[in-house]
Amino acid sequence: MGNILHFYDTSGEDYRIDPNEELVKFITKYAGYRVLSATDFDKIKRITVKYNEEEYELSDDATKKFVKALRKLDKRQDEFHDSNLAAIAYTSDGDMYHIKAAAGEYSENDIAIEGACYSNAENLIHLLEKQK
Image: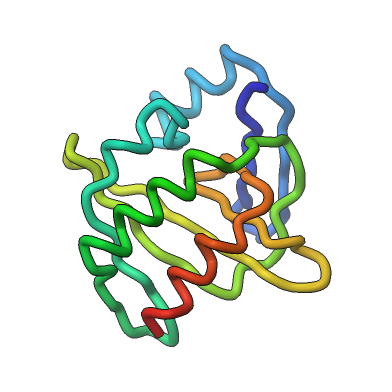
């Protein structure tokens, strides 16, 4: 599956755009939008959990578990509902990716990393929640 773009304009309007390689390249070049590819999950070296305006570092062990669980997830193109937990993943390339995790009636335990949505993320959400 390709990438799906999910963004807001200045008025707060919500947009989702189906895969389009040229558009993805354009936005990546001019707006800095990117998606952490499944082939790059092993580049995640450090994760900071953000909760109630506080930041918490995942332990090295929890980060390894996070990456291991992440590899098992199914990527899909779908809506990502309101997140109740956020984190930032730092990679060995020096890049920073935003992680959003949502668990609840509508989200079905989903996680998104820079707009790439993955399903069945109960284990990842649990790892992030334990840091609160």
